[in-house]
Length: 316
Image 1 (cartoon, one colour):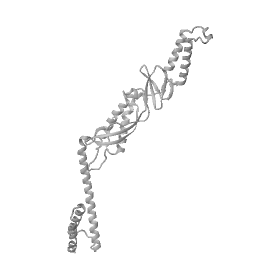
Image 2: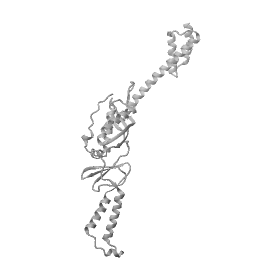
Image 3: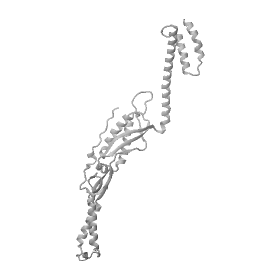
């Protein structure tokens, strides 16, 4: 059934910040070489080793030069950033978003920026079975496998407090909405149910993707791993399902037995040359006895076997 979807707030209504590339981002090897060279020069000028005689005749370095070299070493070393594959770094300075670094390797960024590392790899979420209620009011437990990733790092960091916890809460809410649209099972009546994994996955994926988009998350698929009734109703539902299966099996067996009996009667009448007229009252009684013998292993087969010659002689 078609269920009206509520309007989900756009990303701009939640957070005006969107991901952009951080600048400046320089190769980290240049900053590392600069730090090593300036550190070596600072050490030489500060200690003035007497092993080199000509250095002792040089004038003493000024404090400004030593301070400048020390500042260069600190800035070069403090700005080094090692970013691995599958991760991004969100930079903030004085509480303001300054961009995202997605480049990998050894880099140099603004040393005064605060860094927030975000995992942008394709990930999956599989927790405990989530409780819900189907359309007819039966409590059910649904196990889900969610494949997702962080698409916009700025929204994932600033739009919500914890984007992983946000995903878990929205998954529970979306799953509860989808479960309430259809019954878990239809006993005796045909129709769609929640056990249709394809329909359930498509519906849950669309709802969860719309709910998590403002937080910068991208949901690829939601798959139904398990669907069971809650403990308090599991026994009652099991008995109801067993009764339905027994009724269906009984109907099938009776229909097959009647068909077999009719085929046997037609074959006997054809062999004796009686034609294919509609069964008389005695033929119907014979069919009844034959069906009973097929359905009940303990039936007295001699009862209808002995009646058959009498029945055919009386009918002739």
